[in-house]
Amino acid sequence: MAREISWTDTAEIGIQLQEKFPEVEPYSVRFTDLHRYVTELEGFVGDPLKSTEPILEAIQTAWNEEYEDAR
Image (cartoon, rainbow, N blue to C red; front, side, top):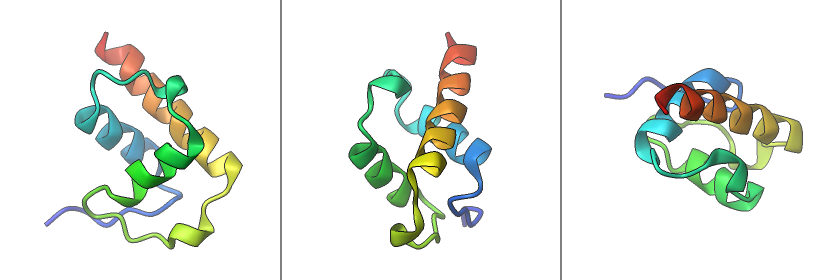
């Protein structure tokens, strides 16, 4: 079973997004799509209504760090 994650687990979310979407450039993803990607991750238990723009920005930044490291 996957570890439970929520909106505050930005580093873990970034890792999982990079694993799931390795060819996607994170800063090209709209926040509406990013929100959907996150809520559909295995183990995600956060309330979909509790995301904010700063949280999505932090997730996008964490994902971009993983993306850059993988290049």
